[in-house]
Length: 517
Image (cartoon, rainbow, N blue to C red; front, side, top):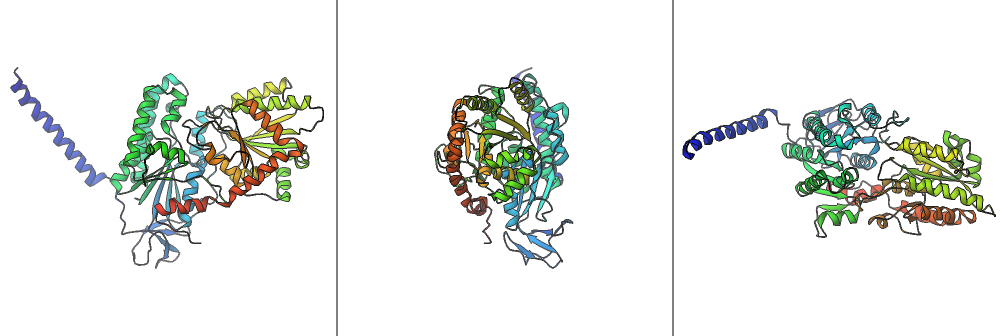
């Protein structure tokens, strides 16, 4: 068969498949594509939370604000935003704060992610924690808010959950396909079209791809909120030279250029994203404390420590200063080396035995959070206690709701951050919460962005290993705790510019919202 004969057979076949593909795509776009966002038809929000109905009278609406409609107890909202979290919404405080701020200014929000029992099931499948059955709580300001609708994603099937690194190459792509389908179905058909879509990154796969496709189909503007880099988190699990890490890096870089706007948690992250060039669509939105984190009075501190089950038995020693309360919040993962704190506390306990003047107080370390490595570290703590190597230190764990966690931070003497940045440019939000409660912080500081959050010797101190952390405990808690009290003044000053002021100046302008104050 000569070339001309082969071409006469192949070319029509190729044209047939191309025409078929075009017809399928056009049919999909005409009959099955999700409806687009219509800027001329704002939605109504029923303030009793009964439901949402389309607007019939657009004359009374004003951009980004509520206006009373002819229907009783209905408010018209022209600004609509989808907030996407491919994970547990209750463990994504920054995205919840976005939703609260948008709703406060009159916008309508759909926050999409795992919640309640679905988040609980996923966490339980991934971890052996005894307390993983406790659900992560949605922020109280989002509950029963007529401007906010929480849209749950489906929990990941157990067959697609594995910790086996070898199996990840097979399970990983299947997991991404399943999540992509569920997310596309939710964003395209379960919620009405929005003007903006705000996506948390990481995770980046498959969220960025699905979000961008839906935004194209629905006439929605995509905004990415960069908490970290997905490829750097993946590298922690697979190693930086793994092919999937290179693919993830390229994938994130591509969607960075396709999105409309970007928020980053640090200036260092912004510079890394834009390669030291200036781009007006990449804005730094620092995490700042919310009003729910506040400084407690001595009476409130006394009442809380006496009530909390983990501290009630030791409240008298804690309130007198004979014991010092140290708090750390952790997700019990590889990017937080908890062994640093264990080794430092073990050495500190030994130092008290050697302290002839007995000037050093005992420490109660209360660790909050849940995650995959918790049981491993609890076993280590039990072994240290059996060997009596923590004779002057008490380590306990807890899982607290939002209100009690805020009160715990307001009652503690010192906060500890063990966050090790995978990218070098992300920042631990737990430190922001601690500053909101006026709590000074010591943290692992060997990464680029640390100085954007903590001013050394003013509101906190940094360390690089267990020996440095032990020295900080001794220096800050000796002489009646004079060192930690000097840092407390700086931590309290951090509360002067809160989340609302930061959000209004950055995100509020992007969404076209102005403060009502």
